[in-house]
Length: 477
Image (tube, rainbow, N blue to C red; front, side, top):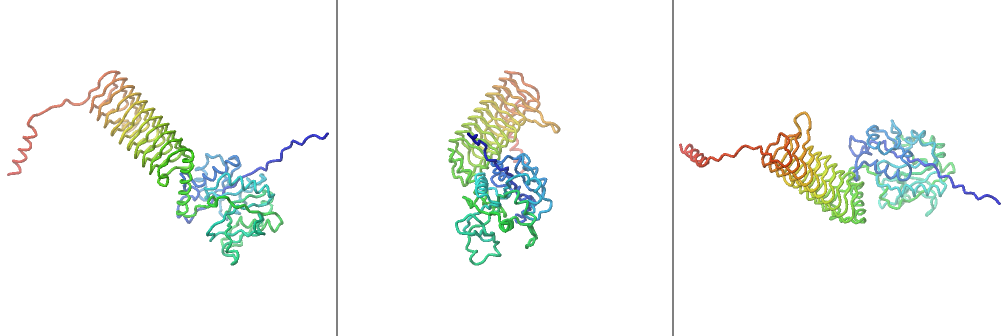
């Protein structure tokens, strides 16, 4: 009896090349095109995120050129590889330069670093379609209401997968001008066939560049199959070539993010007025008021409320926390049931613990405020550690900088600091101690004691009346 064949078909080794070498001259910017931001991070970072959900980061290669080191540095943490295209001579030339990195693969997919709306689902669909058709080249296409300026896809037969040609706008016949299916510029290639024919590309065109689109006709003439797959969402393939297009993509991305969060149980009042970055996470039953900005890697728990016009960058906000109107928070942690604002400012490195209160016009920097403690009005705490159930009165400041170095202030559990006090670091206020209003503290205060450091009040009766009469007499002369 013959043995059962349990051998699984070999999965083609797949690489993804991201074209990211261009200048983006239409943006009129000195910065690399792919580092312009939409949805809170660079265009290229969005494409890398989609690609690395399909293949390991080690199989993704960004082909970089203009400001190459800036681009490499900006996305180096992703773990992808890089290929330098020192001279930008077209999309075909980019793959020629990358041949050494890509040739060991069975399948090469090509994405654009300035098309951030592409999804991992569409990349997978393009790969699977390419493999199912046993094609040499597969093009991703889109159907646009206004296809002007784009190359059109001419299929061999209507409704069939096989492509006859890609015809550029200027070469369209009257009949071809009625075609609405355009070349999106995303491809899948049989790597062996691609690199055995890539030297046939020519610079015989208006710009004198090697165009990857020409591979369709080259492979077709060599009797290899070229097919096309239409994207399910035409918006995915759009790139950002102008500032207006970047703005449109950004709006699309942010509204999509709001819809995603609302589908997950978040209440967003007037989502069109909110700015929420792609990597932000928000728990169910949290309410986000109009005008809120949630940026970077911010994480918000459940049942929290974020007040209008608050700007929050890469913070962790706990369950049931209340962030009132106009707060600005950066790289800090706000624990469960804490309350901030209105108009609190947390600079990087702060922690506000459970049930603590940070009030209006209070600024913190590298400061921890313990559970149940309060700093409710007009206060600055820098490089400070506040214990539990302490109260810091209005107008209090910590003088943490002596002109050379920063120093720390320790306010222990249960301390009461009176209004308008000045704490000159380094200094420690012991557990349960009181600091009288308007005191300047320059030495440590023992636990359960009172620190009193203001001048004694002197009252001179009749002084103000005499001053007014003197002034009146001088004026009369």
